[in-house]
Length: 105
Image 1 (tube, one colour):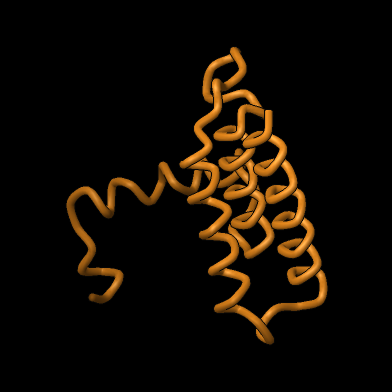
Image 2: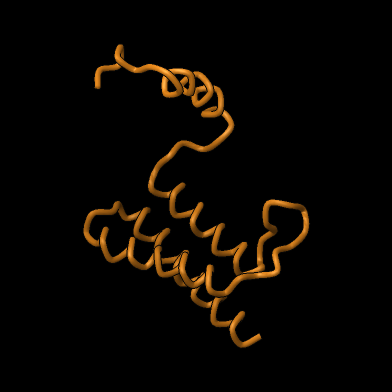
């Protein structure tokens, strides 16, 4: 659909998205990986959730997010920059170690 054909809610949402764009980091691969990593840390109870109180931890949800990042690593193999690959590898290693520690504790 052409830009001039946009109507209704989609057209109304564009200025709001532009206004919010200054408040959040740009969307790129690293931001996506870090967002998923933060979600896993919240589920592990390491990072606070949406409130100011620490999360109680949800190991199943943490494992799901770690598995998602592992799938992302597998599917993007050979297509990442060196920086992106290092970030994903380091994030996965850290999350897997924290997950194992949480399961033991």
